[in-house]
Length: 444
Image 1 (cartoon, helix red, strand yellow):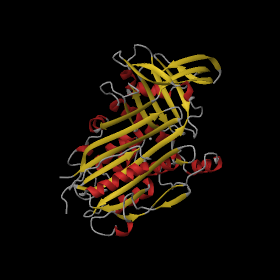
Image 2: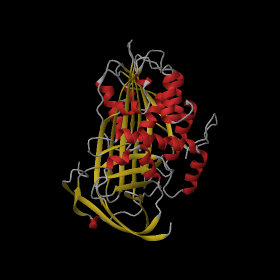
Image 3: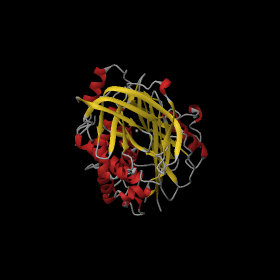
Image 4: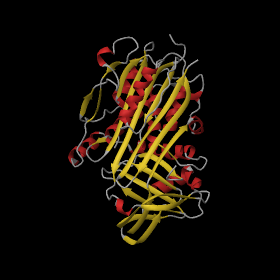
């Protein structure tokens, strides 16, 4: 029997919720999926050292792009509390201020990914440890958090011929460990978690988890997990996003151009060019902002600081909230020059989360008694994200790994040339912030 508990929560992405209290979510169409992970021989999975599927899961049914009645039915059956939406986006603003403040390099991350990972951890926490997590997540109790996350899962889920926004979860339980039934059941009921049993001290188990992640992010992410004899359970949450622009850029208009780096140097990259009639934009005090809409209701917000403005100043929590939430007040002809980019980040989040007030969870006397009666605490938090933008649209994915150890009107025109560092965000159709990033160099 292992002495210490190591729990890894990984949330992958590129990225309408329910009422609070004990109210049950409305009905939502479901399909049953096989729990057999990629690369697993199901017939031999009962042998020692193999991956053993313990339970199947259900996911929201795929709805056709133009089936608006079905979309409205899902939304109405899974209402999202306005206070939860505010908490979710407040977490995005606060975490961005801590995570994206870096050494001047491009960076991106998924606040939704981190939120879901912490939500699963919070569902198994107790006492002051849970209070701290719930405060950071902006929700009053773990039951409300689980119910809201379940409705958000269903409301955001999309997988049709035009767009994809897929979340998935899984529990990987070590051969010698049995987490509490209530924790596992809650993960299945509210986070749609498949369950597998494996020897987590073997590379085979790590490879199976990596293959599961890779498949559920459409090959966008290829994580490498390392076996650890201290590891008793791994919780993996994935999110993958892909959508097309409503008005796609004409590839014939894409041309080489110079992007001015923060240090004044020039970097050559491919710029997409388009002119949009009666398009919304905002000329703020020290920035310009516009939004490009995606086919299935999501959108991507772009913020260009004025010449001489430091993009780091926009990563202040209040400033970021004000800028991203500001309404575009003008409509007219807008000319946009936007670089194609494929940005990726590999981040360690322990310091950022501690700065957000999550401290007890990292201490050795943390209380995760909802998961196990053994002592355990969060030993580190890793996050990877990748966001790609081209003429067709946006593709993004991310993962978070939490290791727990024991021991309007036409008013004018605008031209916005994103040829210097800029801020961007991808928002779901209901306003949930899926991804936030800064592009310091489109080619790096």
